[in-house]
Structures are given as C-alpha cells and as structure tokens.
Image (tube, rainbow, N blue to C red; front, side):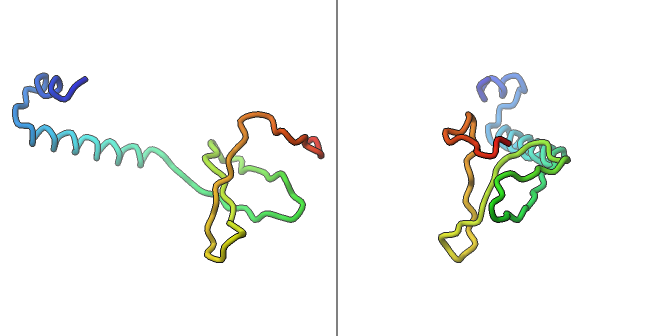
Length: 95
C-alpha cells in the first residue's frame, strides 16, 4: 500500500504529522519485538583434534559460528559458513 493511500484512509493531510506517526509506529514496533525476543550467545573453547561439539539443549536456533582469527593479535573473530549440503571431503570418523 502506498503512503498516499494510507494518508487518505487515515484522513491526514499534513505530511509531516504523517511521517512522525509512521516513525513512532516503527519505533514502538521495534521495542515490542526486542522485548519478545531473547538472544543469548554461548562460547565454547575448542580443543585439539576435536571436530564435533555439543550445542546447549536450550538453544533454539544457531545463527552463526565465529572463531578467533589466528592471523592477527587483535582478537578479531571470523564467521564460519555453515554447510547447506553434504561436505565434499568424506567424514573419516563417520559421526
């Protein structure tokens, strides 16, 4: 729906007033959405010769995996892309 149509339906002639109402709506909507969603992060130390790690049972969604970049001293983290398909290299331990 176009803004002009919304203004006509709400019978608002002042564009500035309409823009303020739209901004206020999105601000309130964002606040409500943030209150209803809980986001937690979990950190796990990696071990040598370990390929598989357990995910906490309270986890609902895995949004990303980041590892500390070994090529710098600043502690920068890099994202690890998740696989959508089977890996090309066969899994040697068949887990």
